[in-house]
Image (cartoon, rainbow over all chains, first blue to last red; front, side, top):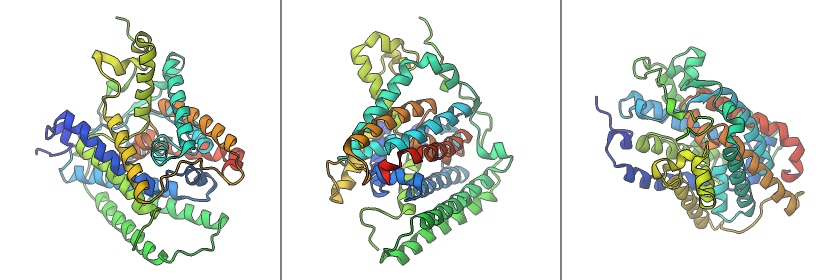
Length: 252
Length: 170
């Protein structure tokens, strides 16, 4: 079956068109980041004090949306998953990178996407964060031979949670929806426990209804995917050797 | 109902997820922000030290076969991100030049920590091959093992340091 998407990979649009379409996609991303409250570093940092758990809840919602869309559209034959760039795993570098990144986030108040979005709204603290971020990237790149071996270590290829856990792909998708929901509710509970708020939002009932409806829809789609036979549609051994960067530049 | 400036987290997250899904469907890849930053420093350094940057083990690939480091998907994406955030803030009347900091935090303290956190996050994003968007969100949706470990470790790292910088925020 000929699939339509990804448009840039199936030849439906030219590489140049694909580049230009990145701009409206970025506009949606930036627009959403602002309305998520992520152009305020305090709101991001407060997640680590459970004072405002909006960050993890937004992240969970974004992941569930992207995940249901990606795998759902693949299963119905609209999106050719083998043409999608799937991120490879370098387990230990990613774990250490994650810890350092978390330190950077709580100390600096932003991550790169939110910092860029915040600068666009006039936040000087975000601009300073970006200067630091550029410096950090420069240090990493210029001293790459120092940590290049570690950077390329613990390579596992493109490995998914369902393969690691030995469960079906659809079951893993449904599990992530459930984990996102339970995790969000648990963090909400902790927030209300440590930072009880007295002000009530007049729209609270409507917001609850809206979010409840969206979550219910995600649960239904996830539940349906859990029963889809997924074994046949994805090659489990894609090998992307070009992701690996040699430690030292190859001599001419 | 009317959302106002700050949307409830679920619809806000869904719109971020939709931008990611659009990238999957159109480009066959995810969104991300840190890659554009790396390309930007590579471009600046190339302006100062062209030969050394082209031979650099890490930055050299951005210049392979006469390529321009800024002519890339991630850079176009970040241009859009800037426009989108600017439009949203403008329509909400929230465009303001200011330094956001906690009630107990001085301006100098906030900016010093902002810079420090930036350096750490910048280094870490390169080590982990992506940031919150390009690695955690996109990899999370792709069910990537490394991305989920990265995400858990972000929160572990954040909680580890939270107590020490609490005066900046709360």
